[in-house]
Amino acid sequence: MHGDLHLKISIIIAVYNRKDELQELLFSLINQTDKNFEIIIVDDGSQEKLEPIVSTYAEVLDIKYYYKSNSGAGLSRNYGAEHASGNYYIFLDSDCIAPVHYIENVRKELRLNYVDAFGGADSADKNYNDLQKAISYSMTSLLTTGGIRGNKKAINKFQPRSFNMGISKEAFKSVGGFSELRVGEDPDLSLTLWEKGFKTRFFPECKVFHKRRTSLKKFANQVYHFGIARPILNQRHPSFTKITFWFPSLFLIFTVLSLVLSIVNYRCIFPLLFYCCAIFLDSSYKNRSIKIGLISLLTTFIQFFSYGFGFLQSYIKLNILNREPKEAFPSHFY
Image 1 (spheres, one colour):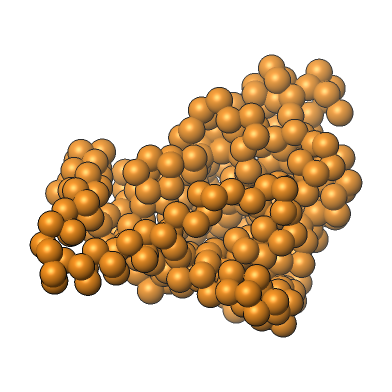
Image 2: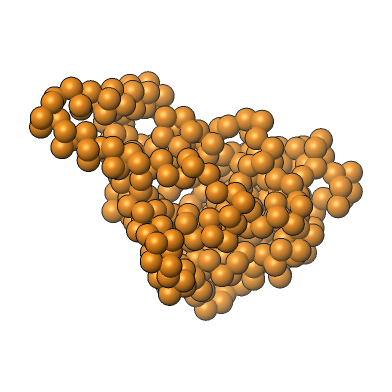
């Protein structure tokens, strides 16, 4: 399919509970300047009653609701794609909100420069609480993740993330949709697309507001499992491994060494303190809040330590002890 052909968009939302957040997302889709799309809601075995929420939007949105037993987000998205009538799928997480021009900007990008799959940025809405803003900073800042998730322009080999991802029906069907991975299924899909010769691109004007995790414990657990997933992905896609994947683990080791060595020579702590000051000042300035700057220090260290520890644990089991991924981390697979 090319950009000059008719583009029929299907928005696929896999959801497990999160009734209030789903309602906020659907409300944001009502207000789109471009209303030419369908919505597929896949209820992944929620304990909360979601169908009444969806039914309230049936008169103002082209929306379909499907309930299935719990299987995880990736397989639920595949289920949604099977029931979609569009030729271009957009996957949004239920804890996201789409700005009013989101669909309009997606269509504009695809018409100007068609691509098989795209990804957009995510950021914190001004109404989010301080912790959510701090987590968003840690996940998107140039000083923490290199800024790629936040707003990195001119990336023609961007790995879309499933909270804000678009992909043509042709490409999705060609690679078989999301794989059996429970964690890391979105970069796995992107890397498979590249291996099959499909193109991906970053859409700078197609960001969403993303609530992310609402507690430090949930955030730490999430990025810990992200860290475990990376060596698994490296085994599945060895040609796309990067030395930068080691950064959080190296930062963890560097921090521990700095603290230990500072007992002997206090100057050993200076580089770490300089980095902490940079994080604090940058986040305080961008969020216009000293409090968020302080919380960002905590969320940044939680992010690096949790991810870094998960990465090291996974690397040792897979590459030194030579254990099979499904045997070493069964919870990461369906």
